[in-house]
Length: 110
Image (cartoon, rainbow, N blue to C red; front, top):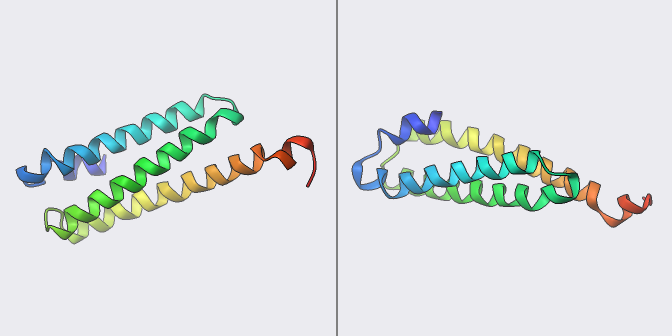
């Protein structure tokens, strides 16, 4: 929701290019997360990794918006903090899935 409010205030030159690209990446991140939620543990990791990749790409585009002064510092920081928090959660989820799906875990060894 935060991004939606900020996207509408971007200059037209970036609203329909970088803004739209970020919007699409965030939607694709949500789709990947929603897909992973409903899969069994062995199938989740590729979707979580895809969500991380989409999130990281959106952060790069946000940085470009900030560097071109299309997004002010206050808005950039607010968005970055939220995206970093989501990234940490996704990274933790991916780590947990890797641990659960590791061959040692599957065979009962430690």
